[in-house]
Structure formats: C-alpha cells, structure tokens
Amino acid sequence: MRGNLSNDIVSIKIEEGSKRPIALHEKSLFGKIEADTLNLSLIEACYLHEKGRLDVYEDEIKCSLDYLIDLLKNKEIYGKYIVFRDLKDRGYVIKTGFKYGSDFRLYNRGGGPGKGHSDYLVKIIYETYEIDALDFSSYVRVSHGVNKKLLLAIVDDDLDITYYNVEWTRP
Image 1 (cartoon, rainbow, N blue to C red):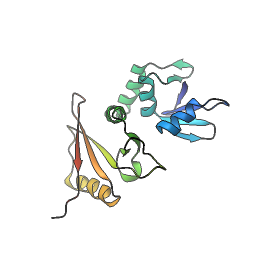
Image 2: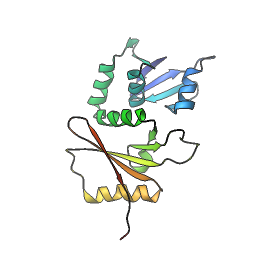
Image 3: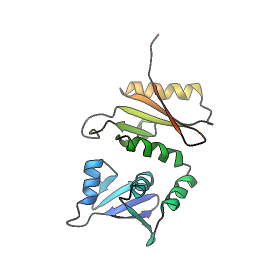
Image 4: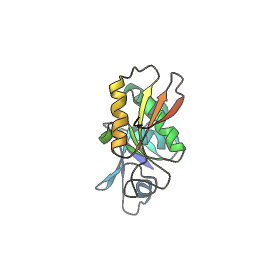
C-alpha cells in the first residue's frame, strides 16, 4: 500500500475496488477517513512502514524507515512513537488523547471508538523531565473525572519504557 507524506500527514488514496485502506481503518482503527482518503499521523505511518504494511513517499521519493524516524526525532516525538509501537505490539487500540490533555487514549483489544469507551489515558514522561506536582495532580484528576485509568509511560535515556498505573485515592 502506498501513502503520500505531506505536512506530517500520510494520505492513502481510497480507489474504487481498493479495500485495504478501508480495512486498515475499520479493523485496526488506524487514521481517519476524509472523503476518498485515509489520513494517518506520522507516528501511525511510521509504525505501519516498520511493519512492512505501508510504503511512504514524499515528492515521489520512497522514504526509508531511517528517514521517517529522523522526522520523528526532529519533531521531538520519537519517544511518543516508541510508546505507541510498544502498546500497539501488545494489542491495544490507540487514538489521540489530546482532548484529555494526554498523549493517547487506550482501548483494550477488540475495542475502539464506537465500540465503547477507552480504558486508559496515557501520559508520556521522559526520565529526565521534571514534573510539577500540580501538573501531575491534574493528569490524575482529569483521568478520574472521565472514568479512565491513568497510565504513565516513563521513557528512559535508553528508550526503555516503564509503565505506572496511577489511581485517584480519597483518604
């Protein structure tokens, strides 16, 4: 399958008789369909490229995985990609968590938008990042307020990930 990279979005044209982009969206819940196009985020496209399911082109030049990873690093979202890849490989359905002030919404296998609510909000924090107690408290408060668990993904300097499930407790 071919996708075209422009402005950090990879677009896959849905041509008549072509079911692969539609199946990618409906079964695996990648991207967003707009008119006759499946639009993927750079992170989703990099993941699919790495798994051999998508060829990405920019200005008719085929992009290598290293090129896409360099784009992610330049945009300072490579750590986000590492977490996305890890969670996707574990079978979770991942959507943006922007609305909730988090990096991702996480659905258990078989779930997804339209099939129920997400189970987790994922907030990515880098090991060297200093977090303010009030900011941390707001992450927990928002997740509790929308009936979701907060999953902190701590990414260390070696790009290893440690997950913490954080819950609201009333003393």
